[in-house]
Length: 372
Image (tube, rainbow, N blue to C red; front, side, top):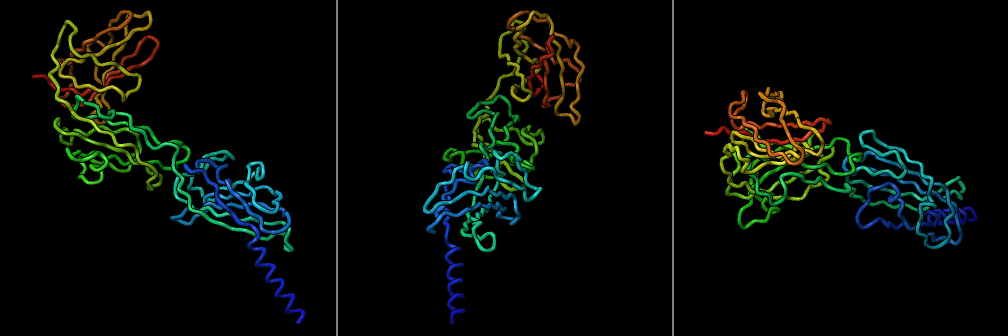
């Protein structure tokens, strides 16, 4: 009889021990981004006395059930009642990556991987008869998103373009170290008069779409029909990591405006495009004569010009009749007559590169249209 009573008491003690510590999550409302945020926990010790404990964490991919990251805190004393954990309570933390397929910042303050995960915590008491006992457990599903989604760059939102085959560029989501294989889906749709851009993306058949791009720019192809000057267009980028969607960009719109024929003028009248230090940031249509503005801030009287056909398979460089351009101090309005330039092909995309004496480069991308 005495043996039975002792056995029953032992079982009751074990059941009580398992429920001695309650775990409450205190994650930030805007979501988790860095490792220290994983330890925003509140522990409730329901026992009557203090106990030495450590916290063990396991982060698992919810889709594959693969272990992504584990972490073990130092041993600390947990008093009776509720306690909001501070980093000083659990540091130093020993982290171990669980899968080489996930990019993991090795720093204790590093970024967490992007995706949907299960995180489970075990509160381990070191006062048990067996050396340690699990006295509390809890799990939660985490949606870890990038600090910022992909950012659209060009065309600008609500811009009126003078080119019917635009160049599109965007910036990647951040932080880049949180991604292993970053890919992009690009979509372009027409927006009807009664639609919002977001509705158009959801409801309309795309004008053009590209999947799994591994670069952050896209030239509207020459093989596709020109965009219509009477229509409003919307575009968006979807970033993916290992094929799984992680973030959408904003939705931007633009129109293609009707352009006037670019006639040659020795007076310098007309529109002069500004060069830009980034290759993909300035775009115009050229109908025989390319006009551009160059600001000479140095005491030099010459710049070098390079012209490249971007529509050719190997980015063919053209030989200019006058590869050097005489300039003066200040603003220069240059007119480059390309009508007799060998190698100019109607509707091809070209890149003008202007290099000054300090080897600083400025760029202008343009579509050439043969004047009639």
